Image (tube, rainbow, N blue to C red; front, side):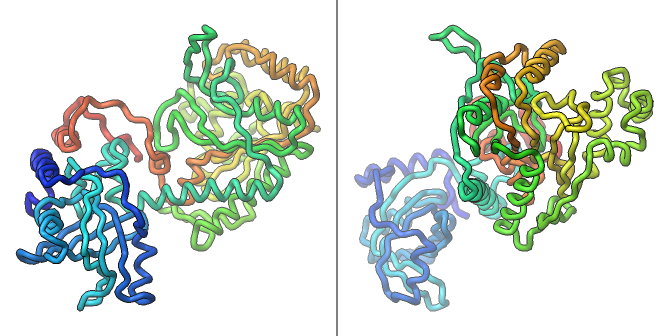
Length: 508
């Protein structure tokens, strides 16, 4: 491919000046009456010789001698060939032959018809520059392939990989689908604060910020739960929210410090109704967004058609850790045998939790509801009627990943206050640093019995799109900042093993 076609940075600047010398604005304000490529193509048969105006990015060009050039034009809907001859006029022909480069955004007006070889083509009669690209686009065949660069320069990733764009189209439609399903069931979508005076509603380290006018520290929310349940007290009976939450934790294929949650609260039901609703949501979305209700994650085929397995937390620990889950001494011995020495002397529920994470979670490949968690690790859940040391809670797993967490909501203000105080007393960095007395006061006004659900949207989209990294479903995952430099320099530094160039994380 010639320099004129691709163009170094300096060459593109030179072409920019040539455009200006011709009196052409390289970045005009609009392009009226443009039709998307996908909408234009049916007209080849339906309305032969129709005049159309199309616009998009130049993805390829083929020079066919002194007078003729072909372009491949792409927009978000598809690709279309454009042919430019001398009959576009002297200026238009000069632009097409000498100044249009790969990556430029250009508008063409002309007759839509087929070439002798049957290719749908716009036979251009007018050329209009819409945006000059001053950087060379990704290499045509492979695009941006380095994982770190794909996430850092997502605009180039989207430009060169249609399958990446398809993932984010799916994400948008999944969220729309969730809203539609819940709306038909009478749920009201609401918005609650992202700045919280107390970090609560989940076990996680918060991000801290400061409000100058009020001179107070605030936290980016780790969950919307406590505000949504205030709405139940206020008289709403079915509410949900889809929005970002922020947790100051590590980055991995399953974790990003900011991610999207859907939380819902439903008055007058318990966790069992929420479990049925969760299964319905997944089955419905799988039918809509997969071919046969299954998805492939790596080498595993996950069947989302339902019904889903249900098993208790303690039974699973007993089965997979090969230990009596109700015998604390046996749990500690087993933890020591498995190398979990850091929790061997911890409270029994902590040992049980570590064994569950090590021995059980990796086995939960097909969709599974895990129920009846220890009360000590579930401070906002209602206790089981016959076993108060357990709570009416479930977590939903597949492929070894937790995708949802739900429970019958604790609405006893006296018990809630005692649990908050016990949490604060632990001084655990992932527990609230102070008691949320305002929330307790809200419960004192009586919250109806209710079930609640928290669903990770990013992981849901991982499942439905078949991706193994959460960063494939977040448009702009958090990355370490780089000094100003070109993509080419970034690529070169990484290829040379520059220690200051961030490595792609394992498992991406």
